[in-house]
Image (cartoon, rainbow, N blue to C red):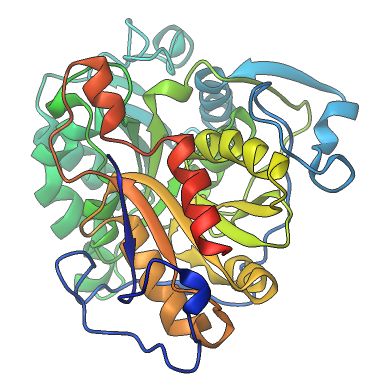
Length: 398
């Protein structure tokens, strides 16, 4: 099963934890050694722009505090992949420098139909179909960004972009620095990833931690149609290279989004559910597992605060820190791998910045360090499930 790992050895009863006697220890095989990260300061304040109920079986919200205001405002319903399409289409209409490049993005409309109809509307030069050669078309797109275009690079699957890792790391992330500021790389790298469709090990990759280690990249993960569109537009407008992670199981998630234009910050977390007893930090698909667990926790008398961190680099330590100062306990839930994952980096940042506010060691629930099995039952066992989240919160709040 997905594992719980602690930032320091503790007894089974966390109520024995003494804040004055606990000290961080040197990283071991269960933590990220020498992790480096960007951290946002006070300007990274979250605005709670979409904290609504997004799934009928994932309620557990305080109606007067965290219900989305979009329910009462004019808007239209879209699936998540349609929201991505709408955001991309609006930016292409406004800025002729925005273009799309990737496999089957043209006539086929993309592997998950995000670019459906684009080749007819914008032409083959702005919606460029490529051969099966990720290293080549990623390099082409980076070169286009150096000359003033704003390419959106689609990986048919995020795992395929490992073939372009040299271009993404040594060129996309580092060229603005190694060129002495002569070049900027306003490129977006996006595509599907994650576990849950029985696609096997090679097509179920979670590469967030791979890209997090590259200097110069910003990372965001969408989890709702609302933030998918807002983050897509913000990523395209950014002067920095941005990696947008999309989960294959969330493409058909439906929600209402505003009719008027909006753009989200690339460095802000989202308060999904205010609470008092424990802070739960999560992102992407695990947001819904956490909200399912929250329903059970509320019935058991717990009051969890749920935050969708959204920005995987830099972390919104303003929002995260304010929550920890209130609850004094934190649980991180991710689909990334246990060793060297986003959770390990986030836990390190929490210890470095908010150690004195913790009444218990931070817990992290992550996927197992194993290739994802093809069999559905085994696949499910490798990732965190709601029951494990409930157990971890009960352990933290003893």
